[in-house]
Length: 162
Image (cartoon, rainbow, N blue to C red; front, top):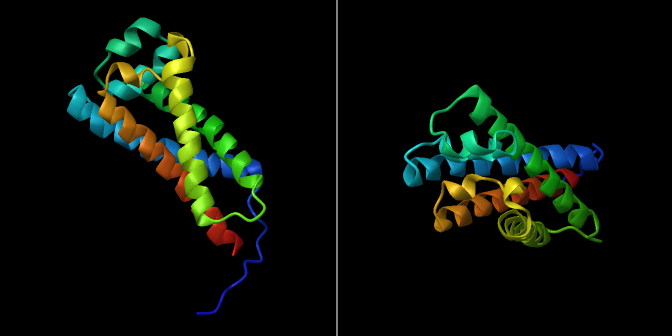
């Protein structure tokens, strides 16, 4: 099988942050909705809870999907995901020779750091909020989906560079 070399330049850090962040946000939001349906009997509840940054009391208790709570929760979740994707991109750029294994390891490491920061280190007002609506096992699945999204972004970037 012949190896093809891409003539397109590698994605810039901002492009990677956006693409990796949106992949991670999308996959983790899907898991938030699925686990919310199971744990809180509402797919919107964990996404609404993320908007507690904007509406502290109401967002954590809201079950119904709404523009105010659900959409703003998705936006906040996506922005936070892009922050962590920027950290992932920084790790990836520090590698002399990026590999698939490195992308997987970096994604797992960033997701683990994000979980510790989100759930243990920041003040309650800055937590993701969805931890109030999901069981602990579901939280692990959410952060696993987040890591998967980052890893997919890293693997796609490797493929583009080959």
